[in-house]
Image (tube, rainbow, N blue to C red; front, side, top):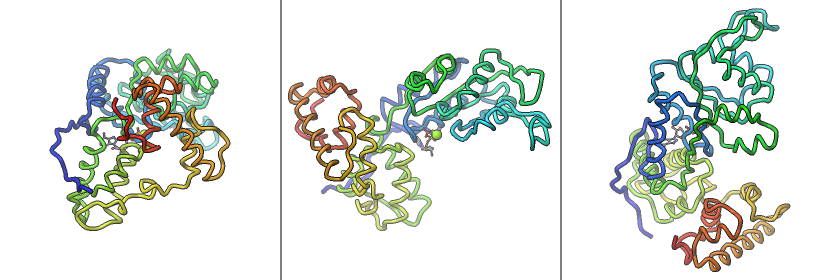
Length: 344
Ligand SMILES: Nc1ncnc2c1ncn2[C@@H]1O[C@H](COP(=O)(O)OP(=O)(O)O)[C@@H](O)[C@H]1O
Ligand SMILES: [Mg+2]
């Protein structure tokens, strides 16, 4: 197996987002354009794809760059505390409110607010948030008078807000308010060349700050990295490299240096969770042998669909009623890529 060494790259570092892929370059262009406007941006992408980095980049490129950038993770806001966290409270507003406290909206006045995991906002606070966005005023908890506020909103979610709306967990009117410009951040496995580019970027980083000095990646390790689906995206990749630096030794990164999930040692239950989210897998699978059976079934269905579509992934995806991306990911999981059917 061939050892891989660091190739020559020309990489972009777009406000901390490192990439050499056309997919991300397109996103950078969109970010540059939307940043100078006042439009509300909704960043959609899996965990670890760089949503927070993208939000910060938008703020930095905007006319508000010298003002505050306030990030709040909506998943951590309890229904009781959300209003006070966002809009502040006056002294005596509730038991324990011993002093006036500024909320995020007040602190970020004239700046940008980043609502991370916005789909997790409670329904009650969604209504209050909508009013603030519409009227550009807010009332601190316990206060009577409203205050004017001028903020630019960026939100992020790994969920489909439309599906949340359909499930009645998210207000439709609020969705339209925050999703004026939706930007999709592609998962790591869909960025051409970025797995390798970022792997070496992180190896360079840890070469500088650890005792180990990695100069090459073994063929086995690279195979494992390439066929893994990276559900935690760039964050997970960086962690995996850090793990290799901590666990392994010597100048070559070997497969045994990689975290267990890359070595195919994850318990089958975990594997199933993601199968359950797609259309192909039968539900209610319990035992590992059932799982293997379901994988075999999927493999058979995919291979057949590909044959019928003369090897075209788009055609096969259409037949299977799944997106091309899902098909591609499944093929990667089932190690069907680089096989006889990977022409397109
Ligand atoms: N393209 C990238 N280049 C370098 N580091 C990245 C990139 N994308 C993400 N990261 C790093 O990965 C981690 C997760 O990024 P973050 O913006 O918090 O993702 P998200 O908000 O989508 O979960 C952070 O440590 C971030 O610095
Ligand atoms: Mg995040």
